[in-house]
Length: 448
Image (cartoon, rainbow, N blue to C red):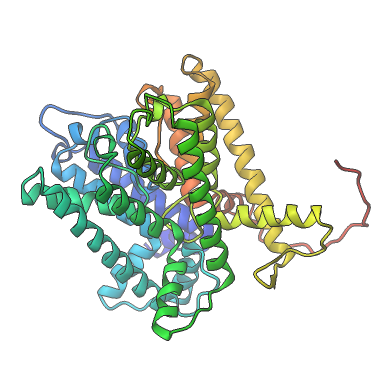
C-alpha cells in the first residue's frame, strides 16, 4: 500500500487536487447508476451518470436528464452531497472529516488546502477551514429556513423542508440544480424565493475569504479589507448592476421572457437573472427565448464568473478587474497598476493575462469541435453551452439533452476544467522539476 501511495505523494499540489476531484466523480457516477439512486423503471448509462455527477461536483447544473423525474430521493440526496462536496472542495471536505475524527493536518495537507481554497498562505488554514464550514452551514441553514417557510404554502412540511434544504445548498454552492422540471420559472414573480436564492448565490460566489474578512471586521469593529476583498466586492457589484440594467432594457419588450410582466416583476426577474447568470445557473425565465444581444451579455457574465476561493467558476472577478485596470493604465500612460491606494506586482498581471488567454483558447477550441459535431444545433446555442459549462453556470438553451456522446464528454471535461481553473491544469500539465534561470538578450517588437 505504501508503494502505491508514494507516487501520489510526489505529485504536485495541482495534480493532487485534480486527482481528488476525479476520484470523487468516478465513485459518484458508479453510485448514481445503482437501482437505489433511480426511480422505479428508470435507468441511465455510465456516461449519463458521469455527466450528471461531474455537473454536481463541479457545481455547474447542466444535465442531460430531469433529476426530479429520473432520480429517486436517495439519488437526489447523493447529488446534493456531491454538490456540497464540490462547493466546499474535495480537499476541504476530506480535511474536515480528519479533523472530526481527531487527526492532525500535516504541512503538506495545509499547503494543499491553501491551493484548493486559493488562499494567500497556509498559515492558520485549519482555523480558516473550521470557520468556513461553520459559515457555510449557518448561511445554508438560514436560506433553507426561509425557503421552507415559503414552500409550506403549497407543500407538506416534510416536502417543503426537503425542497428548502436542496435549493438552499444548490444556490449557495452556485450549482443551479433544481427539483422543479422548469427550474424556477414558476416563481419568477416570487420576491421571497428570488431574493433568498439571489443572496445565497451572491454569498457563495463572493468567496469564503471575503465572507470571513467581513465577519472578522464586524467582530473587531474595523473597516479595513484586504485588496482581494475590495476588488471582488467592487467588481461583483458593478457586474450585478450592469447585468440587471442590460437584461431589463434588452428583454423589456420580449413577450417570450419578461415582456408581459409588471414593472416590479420585470425588475425582480432582471436582478435574479443578472445574479444567477454569473455562475449559479438557476433561471426564472426561458433562456431559449432570449434575444441575441442578451445571449451575448450572458456569455460575457458567465465567462467572468464568480470570485476566487468561492463555489463558482469562470476566470474570476479579480482577474478581469486586474486586466481592465491595466488597460486603463496603459491608455493613461501609467507605469504601474494602482487600485485602492495599492500597487500590484507585475506577476499578478502576468497570471491574470495567462488565465484569460488560456481560457479563450480552450473555449474556442471546444466551440469549433462542437460546431463540427453538432452542426444542427447552431452557433449561438453551442457558444452559450460551452461558456456555460466552462463558467460552471449551468444555463442552457435546451441543447444539453440533445448532445451526442462525444459532445457530452467534451462538456464534462469543460466543466471539470472550469471548476478547478484553467491555471490549475496548465500548471499540472506544464510542471517542470528543474527550473532554469537563463535570461536571453532583450529586444522590442512592434505591436498594435
